[in-house]
Image (cartoon, rainbow, N blue to C red; front, side):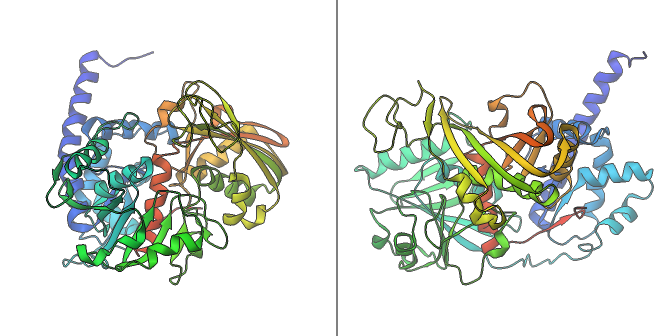
Length: 487
């Protein structure tokens, strides 16, 4: 078997590094001046390192069986700058593969054909709608990750502006602000904050990558007047979980400067539980209180949706192997919930989950068809849902995996469903994954009408990304996704 000389391989690597370095400012210009978010098979290229860009190109071979290098995509990115594009998410990876399969040719002509909807549609005034103020009520695990994502997405037509966080008073305000900043700056699971954070104790603000965030101290929503801070028509994202019904969450709407409330937990009563990508179209302009459901519901509903559409689901059981949370005790102590008082880092804890029943709120067609349980395990993040299903149509593991792979790459659910086909992956490999759930192909079992699927999910970060997608939707932040999905 022929093999390239070592010097040639090394030189190719350096050449690709150089091209990736040249690509980074072009990607930034597309984002900041044209509101164009460039991706590579769903993985954002904006604000990424040279090595990350090279790794994402390598990923294409795994999913498409086709080599794609920076030398293939760089001419596309260069040409995008010249096309005076309107706002959109543009997958240069898919465009690169399509261009190679076509046999090359005139890059600009190819892009004008593929991106005809946005060519010469740039609005120099930057008009893509009015910006929307966002307030984080609570600054725990989800609150801080939402802050990171919103700060990362600031600009580029995203329109969402993180204006404030609301927390309870902790005595010495200056020390409290430093503590809040430190928790945002450092994270034992997700690593350091990518940027700079400064504290102004007198103004009670945190400034993160140029975003000035007001810190408001209050023990209840009734104490806050957001207009006093220049905040108006805001969406309050309630991360506390204290209130989950309309009466409790309605307190936010009574505050001056608030128009909507979004709960980052399953809502009770008639509150719409939204899994973005599945039932976000059910959101009406008049809906003032919404729920982003749970992390587990977000992880399993997209997979269940596509399976039910393709094969039909007769019935099934969902077993969640879930990372422990702040709701549990570090050591054995009193807890009002069954078993949850036992030490989380030392035990597997069998507990209940409402995720199986909650599926019906997003997918009414599966009402009464699923049961569920949960096992909390001694790991701080990344969970797994095991879907044990009886289908209406027969299949096998190969066909099932091929179908889910296609859904993850080229369907309206590609932001929700990811796919991995490696015998070596473990939970920590999915920390920071932005998808709602990741199908583990190597674990798939299918025999006739019986199927078992294993779905990983970052129950903190992946879920937070879904929450931000809902925020974008209710704030009318809409982007075309090109090239168009085939399914």
